[in-house]
Length: 86
Image 1 (cartoon, rainbow, N blue to C red):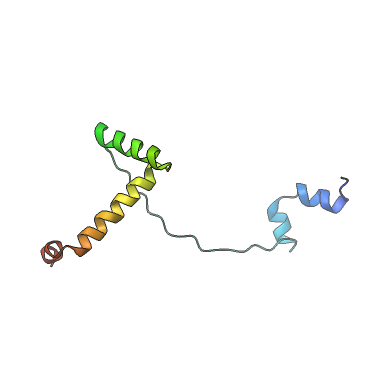
Image 2 (cartoon, helix red, strand yellow; image 1 turned 30 degrees about the vertical axis):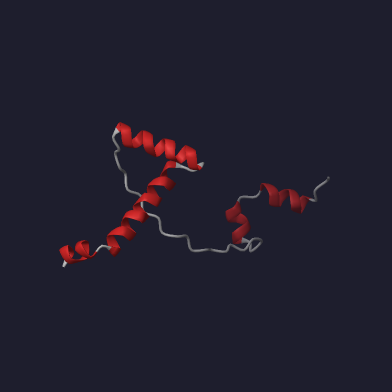
């Protein structure tokens, strides 16, 4: 397939140049907010998270996120925790 000079230029041109010339329209989409918390797990907990992630076929962070969500829902439904924070 032979490219025209314009097509060849478009393939090699820096994106900023294409945007400046109006050749390309940039669409911005909002990205979901993600918070990162470093955490240290002991050997037993770390191994369990790794094995559980392998079992599920996901990244360990997915397992941790799931566990935190479950804990949050449990805490939100516990009347004793709500009374203690008042």
